[in-house]
Length: 217
Length: 311
Image: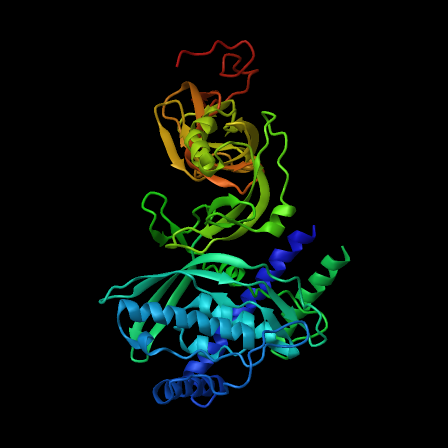
């Protein structure tokens, strides 16, 4: 009985969430001075600046990384930096970029900051938007995420110079707990997953972006 | 119970909140799709699959049945690789005594990895469970070699055929056919292992008995309310001749098998099972109009005692 109520309720809510997210993305594209737009610019600017000027990307090497737990959010999470290799319009370039894209997604889960993953994703990527809006919902009202970090042990690229290229990626995600400000769990933790994904990537003026992403079922 | 009520209240609340675009309520918040996999499913981005014949990743046809996205293998429990075993693990290893042949078995853990990925990393799926075979390392391929044949031998019921209208229908009219074919499970023994088989209907072929067939296609058909009989459906058929016809349904089943409570593994190829023939009589209808009733014209068609005319 309860299991019947649950999926439909979740579906309805997530559909609404996607709608809200798409509105946000649209406003980010059109409006010049809105906050999401600024976030995107500053993030990419700092990323390219640190990549070109300093070899070590970590701004504060003394502060130790500490993963999130029931008591608090993750601390000193290293900010993913677009590697030089990921700027090339080649097979190897896309391999490096796909790895970078998932590190920005992992970073979003750990910090609640979705600006990097959004700026590396195309506006048509429904799954990318859904992931960002899920992370944002989880981090709302003083909550934080425990776990949820992502590894990509296998990336295979089918590079096509004249059209969109494809990458097949294995995605391992750790169990995810959403913690409320008092440290209690917001909902049952989401179990760890081991899945395959197919990404479509295009190389434009700003370099590679993930223009479409889907799960292999 | 109380939880379900609370949930529906939470959903109602969230809808109101979104409509007003104010900050969300923190008292009763709805569930969040947060996982990578669940988000993909929620937004409909689970739209790729692995072509079983080529092994390549291809776009999944809309509405195509989703298959198990994983591949499986097993490893000896507590095995670290090579000749190394985890000693503390061995101390609390699963006991596999007295298998089906009275012999001892070997505990294994099942691992999974997504299909379509090159050199994937394997993660824990389930176990430990017991395998009862002197050569567990190649037991699965040996079972896999037999399973297709065993599958086709199972007493799988193709499903009952129902026609509307029946048992009589009319020439030139749409006769609706449907079946109630359902998932079925079987427990069999292969190479002294307990094997649990689940057969799921995937496709249907209708043989209407007049030389016409439909399928294989994915629709099982469905019942029409009586006032809509005669409408065209995805599985309906028009007979152009009168007579008795034997309708046979062949259901194509997709199967999975699990060995000693291991994960469900796909059975390659479909098993085909046919229903017993169902007879349908196709009649013709003739309309004759009479100006009189049976008292004025007792020889009129349908009047008691009237001799039927030769058509």
